[in-house]
Amino acid sequence: GDEALAILQAAADGRLPFDILCVEGALLRGPNGSGRFQILSGSGRPVIEWVGELAARAQYVLAIGSCSAYGGVIAAGENITDACGLQFDGDQEGGLLGKDFRAASGLPVINVAGCPTHPGWVVETLLGLAAGAFTAAELDPLGRPRFYADKLVHHGCSRNEFYEFKASAAELSQLGCLMENLGCKGTQAHAD
Image (cartoon, rainbow, N blue to C red; front, side, top):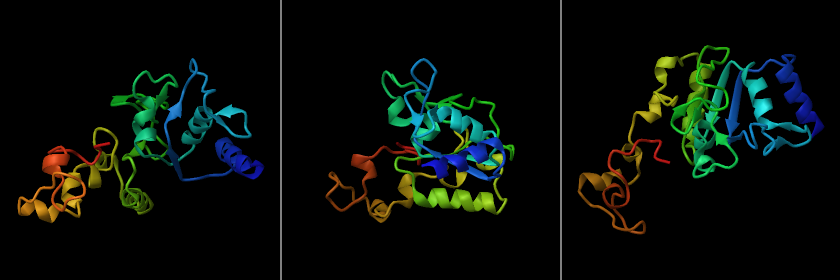
């Protein structure tokens, strides 16, 4: 309640320094750009205003999940809420913060995409940032950390051993590799 709002306000005002802003969920700009579809409880202010102010002060900004990265399923179809991601609107640069946004560190929004997001991707990204071992070169063109985005989901699958023996499953309940009959060959880790 009030304590949480006071902390957020202090961070937004610059009285409470912080390093990382993590946002989960699509940002709703509607109706008509007002953001009134998504108000931060108790504040009377749109979430998009809060996120904009906090992002301007953060050393790093992370979009956790495909909704905060690209708008996700909420932005699909007619998108009557005008949902978007932090720095992407679907696969187009822009989003809430704009394509030229850079956090205080100089990095764009780091999109730890996925639906659901793999917790290991979140932790490894945060550890890389804490260790100071993260640069723009570690991000792919969609702002995702390359340590996971440059790999096929298939390569880390617990059923991958079946692939080596050409044992494919035709249904989810069967033993075997899911890629041939139930997946898409060449699907990247962002297959959501």
